[in-house]
Length: 140
Image 1 (tube, rainbow, N blue to C red):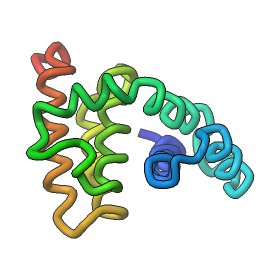
Image 2 (image 1 turned 135 degrees about the horizontal axis):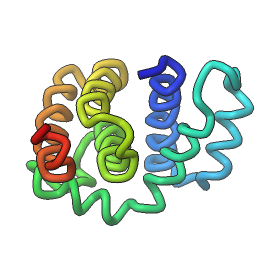
Image 3 (image 1 turned 90 degrees about the horizontal axis):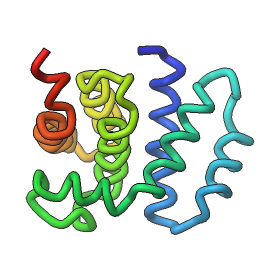
Image 4 (image 1 turned 120 degrees about the vertical axis):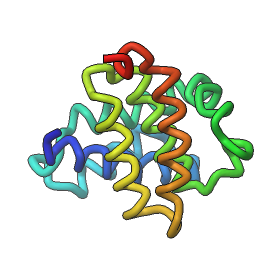
């Protein structure tokens, strides 16, 4: 997986977190990030796909995650919630990205941004979700 795509995910988690917490308009958040960042340091199109995709499919993503959470999605730490939603979007809609990459990247993002043991929670939820959403890929 490319470093630029990983960086796009990194920024998308921050942007989605900001959207969740501040309730700011997605377009404003996008413009702020793009203005503040080096355009060639990340994959802009992927950042935009994630940033626009999560809010556009929010209800569906939360329903996908719900059976694997031990509490309501709104009770999940906001950082981990942003990571889980982003990963659920990738697992459901970015089928060219292997599920293992989605999970590994999400664990790394949890280690950077999340609570001390948050990566273990994220891993457990996403492992179960991947078994459901990517059944065909898991059988290979």
